[in-house]
Image (tube, rainbow, N blue to C red):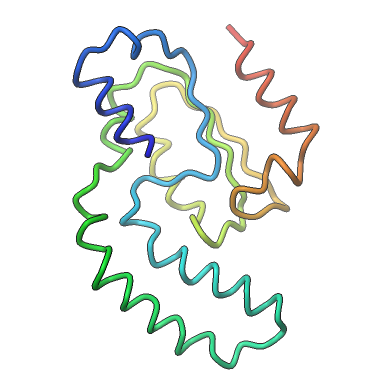
Length: 151
């Protein structure tokens, strides 16, 4: 998880931390805790839409979200959030995110943006979670190349 890595490098005053010049966060989120429920709901929405039936979607959503809450939520809540770490970063950050991402909704990225000192965004209209590099291959390559080579 990027929050762990950045937190460790920043707190340890690691020389590698200062060698990082730019960061790309594609289909990201602020913390695991924030996207657990939306990931389950988004995946069910995607699966049931593919199968053309939604009869079991809501009962299954309740069951899976309850299982997530009982087994994982407490642990995810203890993991660091990326948002407070962003306040300390001087590196440029490019957020790439699909506007209709059901797994990691865009509002989580929008909450992080005010915490960035040097931030760029590319919000993609017609894409889904973690598919930006597949659905927009050429533009993706161009945007990343432009961001990484810009001084």
